Image 1 (cartoon, rainbow, N blue to C red):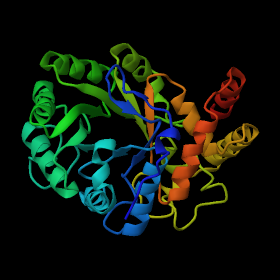
Image 2: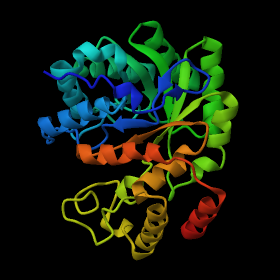
Image 3: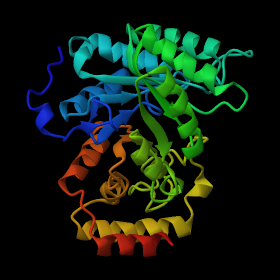
Image 4: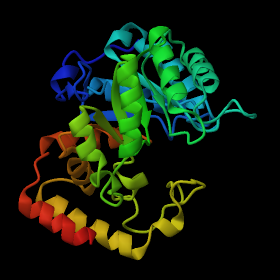
Length: 328
């Protein structure tokens, strides 16, 4: 039977999500990939319990994570039941709804019917009474924002979620949503956005807007779907994401130009005593409004590598200048 490392809370710092009282470590584990129906239970179990032993308390899911949709929540529910049930109060478990989940007009986007029905299904799959954060996964241009935010508020008031979150909202949308949630007095703590060295749109407005509003940022895809690792330095492995059937990273994405940048970044990282993965995470975490990066993994060793980023988070002005030159 799993017994957590008694020193797990000495291994990572914890900070607040925005102005809230909710604490989170700088490393979170996302179950977007590698926890679906075809995944091996023992490997998934090792990653989740191993991450927890390293001080990772935040586990990020969504209703459609798999494949097939829902299977990542089912897998996580099995791990909770077998190993982490007694640690529930120490876990920060989040799920989302907003992308296509089931046929017909009630299984997508942001209606009250979809969001609250989806949350009920997610809780059943994970065997939980509540989640800590329930997100709207993406903006819905057709549904009034008052309805969508009202559904998040209802989820919290029902006791099925403790906090509300948003994902993929831009700065303007974030401000509008926050205004509604503030009026409703909904505990809204986080916006989750994509941000990495190769996709820096969040730097234009989001980083500053979140800081002003007091909303924490959780970053997904901080390693650009694996491009910011050593995985593709010698070509595209057949068992890699780009070598398979991923819709998020294609073989053509692994271009010579991109890999030249990764090689240069790897040399800079090595001079810091780091891997390119660790440098990429430090680059994202340098913003005060970024509370945590959500990493994906296919084995525990990758989580351990990301965890070691904490040994050197500081980037000098010269290092930042060198990074900018490489990325240009």
